Length: 220
Image (cartoon, rainbow, N blue to C red; front, side, top):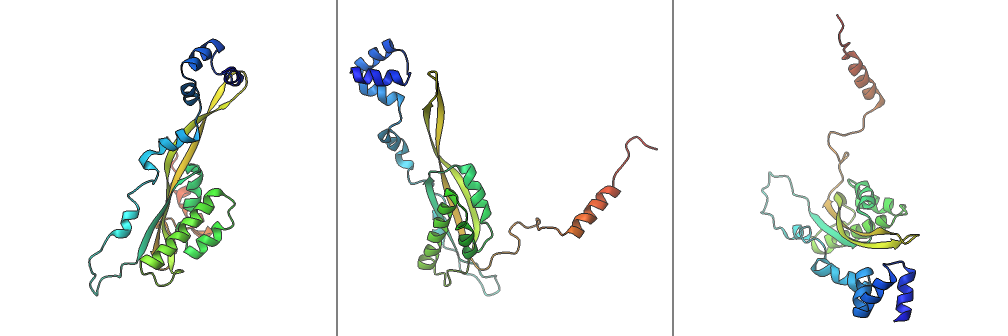
């Protein structure tokens, strides 16, 4: 008991008199209320440890047969990786980076990005390629491109970090879910329609047109 009191007093949590009353009543409860342990964190996941459940059912949709004059519907596969120990704000940059790329180009580019999120995205795309070939009758594994790539916020656990003079700061342990949809065929030339890059001549003409439309307020 004395060893436990000495260790807790070093952490500057409460007064010694209050600690004696709390520890004498229930030592285990006092420690559990102040600290996040591995067993406590595992209990908080509950039934949500598998992550979101609305993305993968898109793979089970059965479409009606198409007529001869309709444009062939390309095959696609949806895949996800859940509960990644990474910040959603950091993962957004990696998820946006690979949109509109072919799978070979996306894997090649992600191999040179020294970030934890890039390796998770790369693993997810590779797993999605295997699913497309084995379960969705995609003939050529290289004939796929990243049609959708985005992330969502996962569980956030809160802890504390000791500071000087008896103070403490809050720490957030964030998790992220990553979602990807691969589509059969060649990627489009411009992923975002209407936002194609402009040449220098086009930008010059737009600037001249804006200058000609200027007005002098309050003039004759």
